[in-house]
Amino acid sequence: MKDLLYYQDATISEFHATVVKTGSEEGRNYIVLDNTAFYPTGGGQPHDTGWISGIEISDVEKVDDEIRHYTAADVSNISGEISAKLNWVRRFDHMQQHTGQHILTAAFVELFDLATTSFHLGTELVTIDLNTTDVTEAQLAAAEQRANEIILKNRPVETKWVTKEDLVNYNLRKDVIVDEDIRLVIIPEFDYNGCGGTHPTSTGQVGLLKILATEKMKQQIRVHFVCGQRVLQQLAMRKNVLSDVARQLSAPEEQAADAMRKFATAAKQTEKNLKDAQDALLQYEAQALASEVIAARTFENRSIQELQKLARFITEHNEQAIALLVATNDDKLQFVAARGKAHTTSMKTISAAALPLINGKGGGNDALVQGGGEKGITADALLQAMKDSL
Image (cartoon, rainbow, N blue to C red; front, side):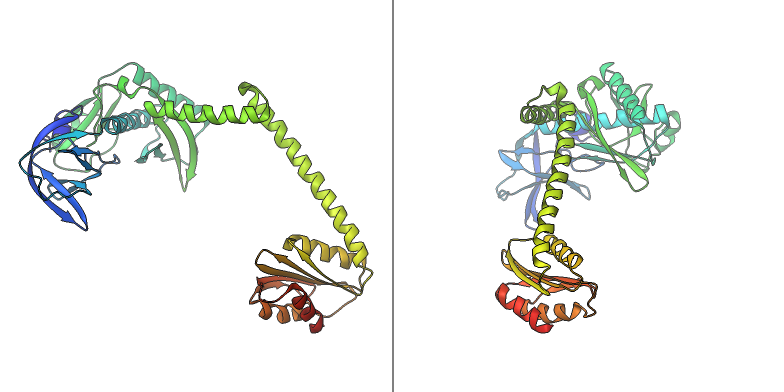
C-alpha cells in the first residue's frame, strides 16, 4: 500500500500509469491501473474524482486488491500508458477537512478527555460524534480556539509506516485496528493517530476551522464544523441570509437579531389578536344559528377546526340545539356534528350514515364527531343525509 502514489505524495495531481485491465460491474465500467493517485473511498474520506485520458472518473473504490476507477464512458479501447488528472479542488478540500478533523478531535481529547467515536466528511459539512451526553458552549469555544492555534502554528503533518510492535513508541489517540500496513498520521507533540487518509504537509494548509452547530445523537453529541475554503463558503451563505433578513426588517445587520425578536413578539401578538377576532366572529355566527333546533349549514373553504369550534359555540349557546355543518374544501367534503347537553342522541349515528357516502374516515365521541372524504356527492346531499339519520 505504501507504494501507491497518493501515499508516496498526497500533493500529486497529475500522473502517468499503465492500464492493467478494464471491466464492467453491475452496469458500471471501470479501469484498473498499475498505480494511482486517485484515493478510493475509505476511512471516512470520500473518493477522488478526475479524468483518465480525458474520460471522467466519477467514483473510485478498492475491491479486494484492485483500485477501480469507475466511469460512465466506454472503456473497451483504453489500454497501454495513460495520463490522469485529479479534480484537485475536491481532493484538497478533503485533505483540509480530514486534517481539521484530526486536529479538532485531538483538541477535545487534550482539553476535556472527550473521545471521538465517528467521523463523517459530507459535501458541505463535517461532523464528529463525541462520546458524551453534554458539551458546553465554553468547551466548544475552547476546543475551536485550540484547534486554530495548532493550525496557525503551521506544524508539520507527518506520515509514517510502522509495525504493530512499533506502536508502543507512540502516544496514540486511539487503538489501531489493523495488524499490517499500519500508517500513522502525526502532528508532533499534539496528535498521533492511525489513518489511511490523505493530508497536507502542514497544519497551516487547513486554513481555519469553525464549529457551526451541535446536536444530540442518542447518548452522544454530534459537532458540525468546516475547514479551509468551506469556512468562506459558509460565511458567504450566512452573510447573504443576514443581509436579506436585515433588509426585510429595515435594520442594520448588527441590529438584525434585536429587530427579529421585536418582529416575532409583534407577530405573536397580532396572531393572538386575529384569533380573538375570529373567535368573536364565530361566536356572533353561532349565536344566530343557535336559534334553530337543528342548525344545518354548508360552507366553502372552511377548515375542520373552524367547523368544530363553530359547532361547540352553537351548542353552548343553545343546549337544545344540534349542529350539522358541512364544508367543501378543494376536492373533498368535511363535516362536523355536535349536540347540546339537553340531547342524548349519539352523534356517532350521524357519522355512521355520512362516512360511507363520501368513502371517508372520521372520529369523535357521542357529543361531537367529525369526518372527511371524497367529493362524490354535493355538500347539500351530504347535509341532507345527516339530517335524515336523525
